[in-house]
Amino acid sequence: MAWYDETFVQTGRSPALWALVGFLVTFAVVRTVTRRIHARQAARAEGSGPVKDVYIGGVHVHHQVWGILLVLVSGLLTFRFRPESPWIDVLALLFGAGAALTLDEFALWFHLDDVYWSTEGRKSIDAILVGGALGGAILLAVSPVGSTNESNLPAWLYSFLVATHLAFALVCVLKGKLATGILGVVVPTLAWIGAARLAKPSSYWARRRYRGKKLERSHRRFGPSYQARHDRLRDLLGGAPAAPPEGRPQSDR
Image (cartoon, rainbow, N blue to C red; front, side):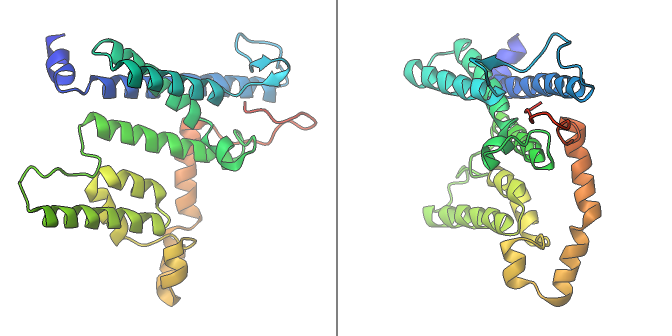
């Protein structure tokens, strides 16, 4: 415990640690549960098993609802009472769990449609990966803009460096690399590399700036094999998408 106290509590990083733990554990549990429900429904055995979809008053309640409530309650309690450890760690754990429940259905509130087990549902896995990576960056005590003015640079130079860094992150987004751009805000090297590399062919950057051979290179680089590799990773984490059973309404399971 002395190591934990010295490494996390005294440095103020214990809430970030427990938020990340809550996030990762909750995602693992909820995806395990939803995959089991989905497999059982695919086998037309909906009535069996200890875990089922939750209905209140005949309405199917998605788990993002519980996530939103957890985030709101834990956030409000933190702002109101500003507790010390261990209570701040408990609230951080609940916040991380709520964030995982919410982002696990990111595709649903992005599309405003029940797409949990469709190909569009893979966006939820992208959101989880970005959320987990941001949580890890915060745990490592990375500055929100990737650097701090510890070297006592002139204010104008420091501001210029931060603005340049954020510009690189924006270029990543314009090149169709949203996750790289978001992570690049806290990890400058990612922003620099993402900004320097080829844009995705469907991105704003490629549509406005790429012609001829460069556009062909982009199509080759981000072709079917690239998409297949990323889809395999998403499916490994979240389960492969599948069409809903014929004749039955689609559920988020």
